[in-house]
Amino acid sequence: MSRAISVGKIPQSANNPNCQTFEERAVDLAKEAKAEEEARRREKNSPYTSWVQQNLKPEYSKALRRLTQKHPIARTILEFLVEHMDNYNAVMCSYAVLQEALEISKASVARSVGVLKEQGFIAVFKSGTSNVYTVNDDLYWKSWGKNRHYSKFPANVILSVSEQEEQIKLQVEKHKEITLKEDE
Image (cartoon, rainbow, N blue to C red):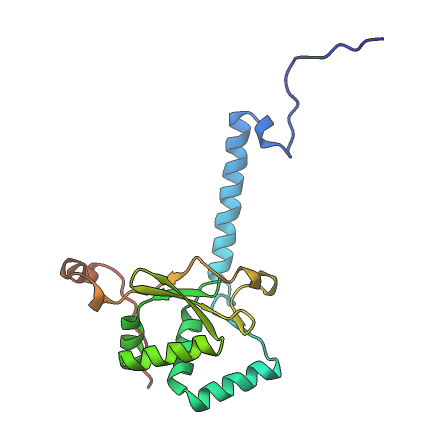
């Protein structure tokens, strides 16, 4: 007994978007976009977006205390990087940004970044004249705990007005500028 093979319409499958009509795929894409927008809205309104998690293992706490005692400027730079890192533990900025934001010399930045690298608190990657700093995800991380292994790239980028060309400096007035709060 032989079976006839139907060459009619290909059956639709929710698991295979290639089997959908253009209209069905457009509806699915609209639903996905709406879900993504809702997720972004929830994340933006979440009180936890400004939190960072810290591993409290005794050896990490001891290392942070030792860093604070022996290299306070390095600890300040580490806190700045943690404050500004994205959900992948990365932030991109130049030495000039660190100098201006923390009111320290270029030599202090270089020395302190060297200490942080040497002691394993950060890794530094070059991107032109700027650095991409990734904070050790065994110590700090911003995203949910299981996402720690995605601790490199993309990065938040922090720019300094003083490093920009004159034309850009003039345009800064038209754009939002981030200012650091002064201690009261």
